[in-house]
Image 1 (cartoon, helix red, strand yellow):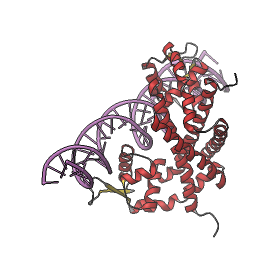
Image 2 (image 1 turned 180 degrees about the vertical axis):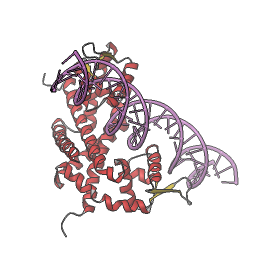
Image 3 (image 1 turned 90 degrees about the vertical axis):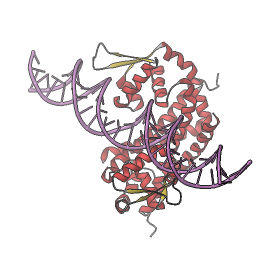
Image 4 (image 1 turned 45 degrees about the horizontal axis):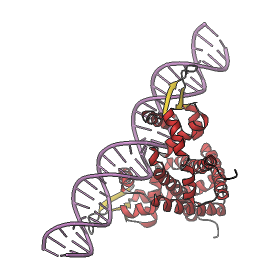
Length: 152
Length: 152
DNA sequence: CACCATCTAGTTGTGCACAATTGAATTGTG
DNA sequence: CACAATTCAATTGTGCACAACTAGATGGTG
């Protein structure tokens, strides 16, 4: 009778998912506010972070950094190109590949973006160690979930 | 020189957001696999959970439970109605409101859904206390982020 | 009682995530 | 070298999140 019932599990799992989902969307809300000045969405900001850090990269590599595929990246990069922040050029060495890099305008945006992270961290009300611990926990979770998704 | 630079903050915040985002999407992936048999997406499953737990509810209340607005719920509920799982009826007492409830088929689906949570919890490789602790942490985060989003 | 602010769903439009497919280029193997 | 398998980006289609707006119903106030 003390065995955990399906109902208990249901409540429990609902809450962890709700919590994760809610936190993710709450983050998104804060980013939306903070990034509005820069004219970027959160996923676009992530792409710019990757380009600022690594310079020119093929779409494939950008996708590996962000765990995104071309179905998401192609239209996103096209919007960034329309906004004048990145350039896409088919690679001469491997014609399958498309190299992406920030334009001058895209590089200039980095200066204004430098204040973003501080504002985000402040918004969490967590300190560095707390964030680190939470991140580690979430990464464990992701590894386990990814492994589980492959089985079924 | 020991003050945390903008670059450090950038790296840190990038990782917490990456981690949260990745975990959220990993959860989604597991749910996609597990819910495929039931013919539900994860958000649809959440709506059914609410209806199973609370019975008939106006769209507004469903949205409050899930933190979703009519822009998301209206088409989602329409899909569930097309699938024969819910019914929508404009309230007689308040014509602004639309009452949503599970059909018999929708209620029957609950039996098959009872096994879902156990599989999800198993996929996390976390035990009950770990999940509870993580959930509490995420809820704190959400509260802080929501509060911060209102300021700006 | 009349009118205005508010509330509720729904719609429209934008952007993201992801599955599935396509087409072209490349690589590996016989 | 030829050809089959693989790789990469793009496209198509579905579904969700959210902002902005519409239309209709309701309720409070002068």
